[in-house]
Length: 308
Length: 136
Image (cartoon, rainbow over all chains, first blue to last red; front, side):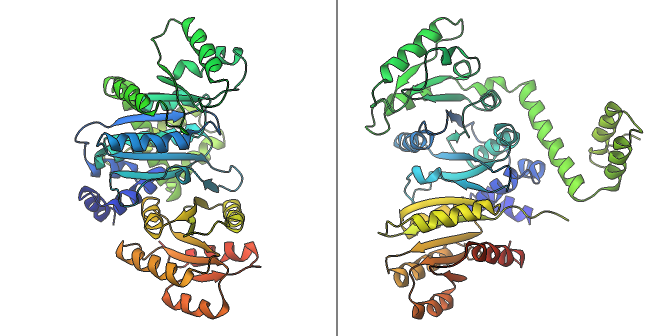
């Protein structure tokens, strides 16, 4: 079944891609899928768009799709919305703001529900990016759930992180707070057709000028009028591909963690007796947590590689 | 026992029909029942809906039609779903549908028609039951 799907994926069957995205987003069979889809021909440019709710992330992503297509490049979009912690349900309303031509095979838009905020999503994001890259998309656009501490995690997974701000966001002390401006590679003052855009820009520039970090481009953009959109895509395209250079320890560790999490999920849902026994012993206090963790790592190895 | 993944339901309005209160109420009810609702919104073409269903790997399509164009739009969408290899997607129709048209829509392959006055739990339990039985 999975083999058929993977074969269809390699034949560039869109429905197979869509189904594999579902599986990976749920953390199912990630290891086999990543092994089966093969390596990407060339790395995609991966861009995340973040900012607080209502700042215009979906709308801007919709406009960026047009820019990317104008350059003759193909684009996949992962549009993330929060999932209810109570019911597990989600209302995914991003693609509604991303008009695209239904006959254009160069655009793939997928809505994702992010359980428990950004952290949980990031767990599968690296694998999803690899999947889309292997399918051959030139650009991957990720719309995050919203700005927050979780963005630092997303930043490590993408090439360019675009932070959206809007007029009337608060006084200039807001910008001094750690974590928001410092993770951005490009800062966009969105809704720049509204009054107050210049002031926000001046505040952001003043804050950035106090720092020692690299120069971050700041652009005023209006999705309504279309002003600045072309420059924005050019700026994003001029940023260095961070992932390629960073493909060192961190990336590998993250992938290993994902594989481990997927193996744990499989062992848990299939009710493996060794796992149940280990958990019982640990919960009863018969073995220490660190000992139990080592035992767990050993237990999650594929059979044959396990230590006695 | 493997817990089944949440149902993915695309809700859309086709054609020139601007009444979206009902579909939003349904969206909320399905969300609160733990489903993943992809809200495609107003003025969708059949082509755009089919593309959305494909890319979103949806299990169900909920169409809301209050314009009277259901006997034109629904068969077209059903036909396009078959052509796109999406016959596994179940189709629900809601809105203003005359009694006499309901059997015709069901014959075409619509799973169920929900008219005005339908209680929200009825839609939720229909989806859950139908999806439990043999739905991928």
